[in-house]
Length: 127
Image (cartoon, rainbow, N blue to C red; front, top):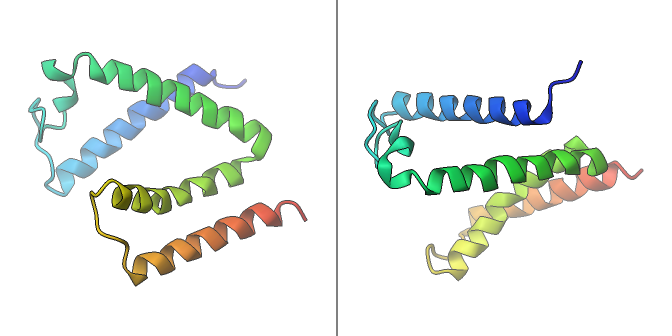
């Protein structure tokens, strides 16, 4: 009585896209059009006809399947908490690429708290 994984991935992507569109419209960051820059449906503009399906295949299907496979071996809590480390990695990457300045003390403190929390969650499962 389980939902097939491909159907789950498709429904999850549709729900995420719908939610992003609603949020963009509600905070005034988007408009109800096919404009490739500000439009909620800009993803369907002719400029994106090649890139969108390619990104959809790579990010949407392969990465989601890899995450769901990892949940079988690592556990859902560890996989979910590991995503909290993404802002830490992005902060360092953006500094190294020259896109942002070095993080301030608030960011360092936040990154330390996230890293310690991640460590505590992972090690608590082993006890």
